[in-house]
Length: 542
Image 1: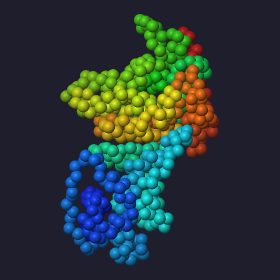
Image 2: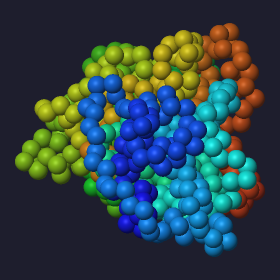
Image 3: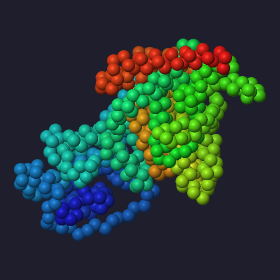
Image 4: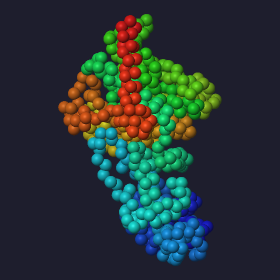
């Protein structure tokens, strides 16, 4: 092989190597003996690798033309081989360097495909994730003595050369941290490449400024303090609180802020009752005194009442919000207790608003008007309306240029555990049918949640396609505040009862980092609580 001219690590030859390996798997005698010996030494389990390369059972099989074999040359791989062997390069050193490179690339690809299976997603620590053999370097023939040897990877992961130790650290941080990414099922190469480069270039984490971190803490404080205030003033009253999933509020703020920077002018929001009061107050800007008045049995707008009205956690509203000079009109659609019923209504409203802005320039209007759907985990997996709405998303006459789906995954459906309510590993699996990228994220890491929300917004604006954020969190109280969940989920609620809140954990983190002073987090709580008390007093005359 002329490694200087036809290195298999070059992008143009990646398909060549895959095809050659597939030929060898099917018939070892069909390839050059030197390649046959080389592949045999990889010691991969043929069935597993074969299935990985084969793709779908119905996929068309084509055999690529393989260029003539060359016998001289050295190139980048030879340079790495020389570096690893004190400047001496023989056939055996070249062979080992090539073997290292192929094994390393296969390991990297395994993390892109299956890294999410070992991500730290559950804030309760109840999900015990077994190590996956395809994510273990030993499965590719690497031993302990191989961890620090330089390996040529041809700008994969942004590096020309890296040791196995460095490669392992990068892929673990990128794909097995607080975020798990599912994107390798996407067939569009541009979309797949965009996500891959977006997460790998920064190891799937945003370095927030001190100001940004304080803003996240402030939003968490408002979300948590509001729920606790309601629990104190109206103990046992149904409110379907967001307790345990408060990271959703700063994430939604990020979607709107980043969206405004990317041309977004209007957002239609659909959601069920879980967390609706928090969204109304802290995202839509509905007066706290109006919400408190509703808890006292009064309508929020007495002059508009024509009948008996509806419960407060079904109501919608609209508002204009300003983000860095970009004004975005928000519309929260009313929704009954029938979960997910609002989804096609939201999509229809988005389509109508886009057409009102001008059908001729529809590509521009799709960038300007977006749907944002908030889901529960059990409903997203269990309600057929979700799949039906997804199925419409790419159809002419129904497409709206992509919707952001945000799942508040509290890992329970009323009293049913996930293992008893769905067959797939994730509640978001149904979204794979439209090749939507899926980001799973630990809700106890608000920076990770905000980071994922930012990527979701950028992807939607870039490709006009649906994307899913699956935020693993928990439900601190029962299905509603009058329930006692410990009767049906005693283990889960024993853990929850002892658990610090997301805000408390994040405030401590920022204190340890020196972003806020000792006690400043509690000061934020006291300040916001005083505001709520003032609005509570004002609600008597609202």
